Length: 262
Image 1 (tube, rainbow, N blue to C red):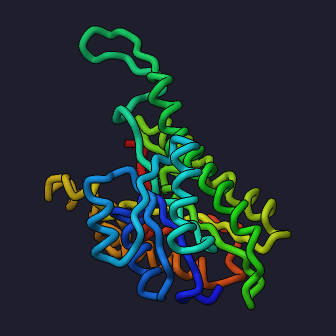
Image 2 (image 1 turned 135 degrees about the vertical axis):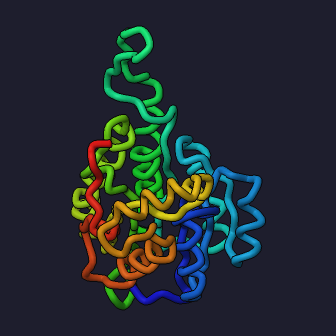
């Protein structure tokens, strides 16, 4: 797909981290970008700074997503690009069933935390895919034959889930698992779908970590021995969008790291 001012994009989780880096990269290509993000404290300012449209959206709420698409399309037109970066976890690390070190009591994983993590990462991504693809199907194909292209964000946890990550791993593995299905489902409409599995990236989540923690994480990466940069994620996302033969793929971006059990 040729990127330029006649193309509109939506980036979920676009007010920070990987989403913000991708939004900036798209804007540098002339694309009109709407940021879906629930953080109304920083979203409008970020959007003004980079020349995007901010739309307050909670991807866990269908009405919020539907309203967000309507607002973004009123501002920029029907999007041909969706990049799903919204995600995260709830409740911190939890084993499937854990034994307390204090008193030996048995503590099952809180099912409500598991369900919320699936809802945010997996269902939230699929909810946006469905809404965006339905809109893309109303468009005429580009010269490349594309009606649209979707990039999802999973994690190396999808393949290397660590102790205490069962909910997050399940959600991210689900995103990987649906990628080829979505690509096949939408292939007759000229809509592509790919997924990036980032390793350990220097995002705001890690920005609060102590220097020694960052150094230890960097040392785990075979090469280069550092945290990934959001701009590196954005460059891969741009290639997935631009290259019309890139379809149905799940690609690790991780410096060859393979996460240990803990």
